Length: 382
Image 1 (cartoon, rainbow, N blue to C red):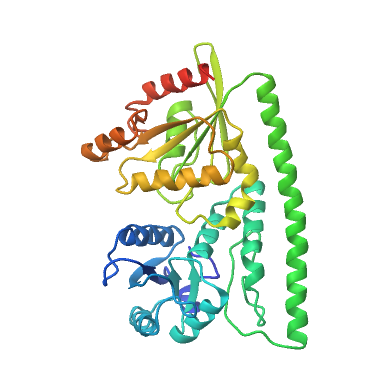
Image 2: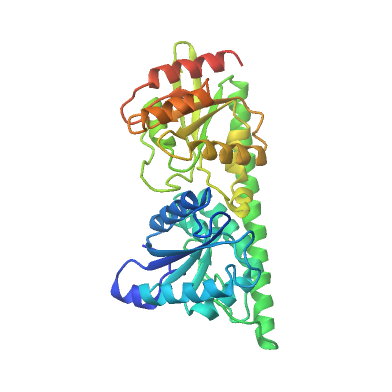
């Protein structure tokens, strides 16, 4: 079910899935079908579905840059309003990060709740965080997103921590309204300070655990990759673990650590959060202590969805995040997953582009023995 910040009153009372209309700005042909447009919208649709929304339609505009006032041009805003009315949309989701002014202007012109890609991803993370550690990190990311978006009516993202975010539009007001707004800001900053202390303690605990493993000479492997590439399924296949496996984006937020023994070699394998295009910087910052499991590992097992038409672009996205968190120099082994469903020519093309990659299927087990052997060999050479 979608979070309360996305749920329209009618949807809530009717008990139905809220309806969303997507809006995007993409360079390319006049119909918005340029390179990357279709893939980006398909991913945004998956994100919306993961968050419990039904996508009814999409409005795409071809322009070099988003309009600073309304994201899309004035004519497209009118079209978006008409589509939202026709589909009885509960929410409009922008394929990008909106400024507070863009949100306010779009809501005034369309009469519909407007959120952006960042808010949608944060909402999904809030839903999927299971442990206290995950919830702390998500709440910290929500506050970082919320602070510059607080508005005078006091509705902006009012629910953070232990639940999903809420949002709204409104102009700032003076007098008591300003005092209330400043009180909200002060309380959020104080809460963020406490949360950062919690995250720092978690980071120290992880560092102690890594130091203990290093002293005991236990090598570590961090499984990473694009979201929904099959990381948890591959962890289960490699280790016999029972990590949660779902065909949704960001099913895993809380790291799972397991041990593998191959001959006289024992090493740990850690499943980590998946990445996505334009992963909100608030999440990267908040999850840094978790992501340090990757930068502190001896080997990164980068799982790739070989059945994804944009697999090479996903690899590039993951490499960008790895560099951002200081893990760009950690040795990497690519595992081309889902070869049981990927077209043979796609797998062959990926193998040509990435000659050292190991094709596998976490579902059938094909190639997993070879992957275990390659992991052992790489760790043995470290």
